[in-house]
Every structure is written in structure tokens, then in C-alpha cells.
Amino acid sequence: MARVPTSLVRNWQLKLSALGLSIFLWALVQTEPLSQETFSAVPVIAEVADTLWTTTGAPTPPTVELRLGGPAREIIRLAREGTSVRVPIAAVGSRDTVVAVQRDWVQLGQRAGVTVESVSPATVRISFEPAVTRSIPLAIRARGELPSDLALSSPLQVNPLEVSIRGPESRVVGLDSVPLLPLDLATVRESDIFTLQVDTTGLGGASVTPAEAMVGVRVEPILVRDLEQVVHADARGPALIVEPASIRLRLSGARTLLIAMDTSLLRVSVPPAAVAGLAPGEERLVRLQVDGVPALVTARPSTEVVTVRRADAPGGGAQGPS
Image (cartoon, rainbow, N blue to C red; front, side):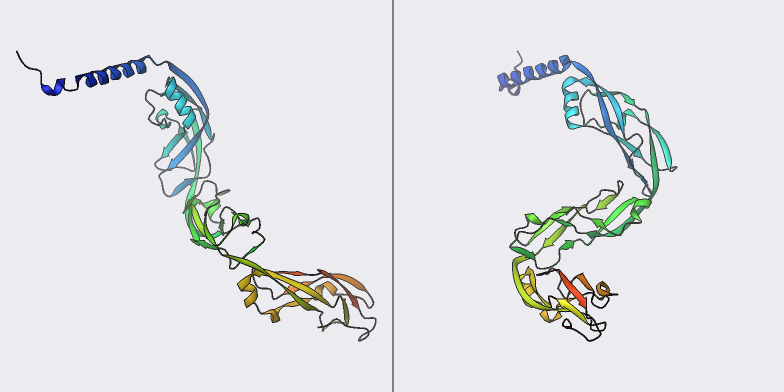
């Protein structure tokens, strides 16, 4: 009598259990109830392979309704994960194209047994225009304020300086810069590098490369200095009396910036245009102008408005220092 090979009988209990489990799972799948579900507002995405053209926006309509059939469990998973209809465009023949939506364009995510029973509407309209690629500078935006004990010691730095944008000619040609999402200064605690996404709002589906940039932030402890400053009036015009004749100017900023600044360049003055046509004896409230303040340094006068009066007669009365 022939002997059964040893390899077949070794661990026969384990192998028999595995076979039984396989049969059970197969039977479970075969007996799983089938379902039909309607998926509404499924997005339609045009994928243009023709590099000379791009879409001007979303297809019309931008969404469709799908009727799907198959195992209930798979349809529930697909509903949870979401799906879309991706329309492949190999070559553009005209600026306006009506495309019949094919069922195999529905992204089912390898869901076994799920089928597309209907698509409504059955067609979508897609508009195209020539594609343009440009390198455009990035713009940094900030919101909020730094913690009260910190100040910027240098301007915000971005890397890279430019991004490449490819999109509809009508949208890309007129761009002079592309903003990053705002940097929240209130979250800054020390000098650091932050990664921010490019803000693609309003770009009409244009692609941006890279999609993010690094922004360098350098901060230092804040320093405050108070200086007494004379209020200057235009000596070329009529005699002017300025009250008060001097003010306190409070400077605040990063320590290294305030220590290095040349205070001799500071000038607090009455703008000539603000006192133009001032009649003899007339008084006028005038907002002061502060010049010579370095970037990233804040100057706050003890009073922002002074009273300016023209002397009654040329050369008469006191004149504000100049």
C-alpha cells in the first residue's frame, strides 16, 4: 500500500483548520447581502495630459450623482472614505468640450464587487485655455503681535524666494506675487524657522511648486528708550509758534537695533503741507511727523498732535525751534 507523503500529514490539524476558515470566509462573502446606494455630490475632476492647455475651472456641473451596487460592507467603507470621478483628457481639441462620463472613471478604491450602475448627469462640460508657467515671488504675511517682551531683530526671511505657478493664462499672467498663509506672531517664543503653505485662494486651480516655504524669524528681547526731541517747523515760511515746543519720543525695538541706531537722524516736525495757508494769528491742530526711525523700530511721541499758530506780524512773537 502506498504511503502518504510526510509533508501532507505534518501539522495536519493546523492545515485542516486553515482550510475550514477559508471555506467559512468564502461562504460569508457569498452570503453577504447586496446593497444599492446613491452617492450625491461626487466631485468631477478633469485630468489634462495635454501640457499646452489647462482647465479654466471646475467642470459644469462640478459634481454628479452615482448609483452604486455591491456588498453592503464595501459600499459603507467607500461612503466613509469618499470617491470622485476623474475625467482623463489626453488632448484638447477645443476651448469648450462636452464629455460623456464613463463608469470606469469612478474611483472605487479596489472595492471588490462594487459596481457603478448609473451616473447622473451623463455628460459634463469642460472649458480650457492655454496654460502658462511663471516664476512668481512669494509674499510673507503676518498677523497678531509678538509677545510683549520680544521684538523682531531683522525682517522676516522666506526660502525659496519664488515659486513656479502653472495655470490658466488669464489668472497667472497678472500675478505679481503669491502670498503664504499668514504667520501668527503670537505663537513665536524664540528665533525659529516656520513652514507655511502657499495660499492658493483665487488661483483658479493653478498648480504651485513648491507648495510650501520656510520663513525665518529672528527675535530679541525688546528695549525701550525715551528721548527728548525738539519739534521743528519749516523755517522757510512765516514765523510759527509750536506748543509744546518739545516732546518725549519713546523708541522700542530689538536691543541690537536700538543700540546701533543713530539718534542724530531723528526729526520730529510739523509737516509744511499741514500749515499751508495759515493766517496771522490763526491756530491749527497739526499731527506731528517723525522721520529717521529705522525699520522694525517703533517711535511713539508723548503727544501726536501739537498746536501751531502763526505770529501776528512777520517776525513777531516766539517761533518754534527749527
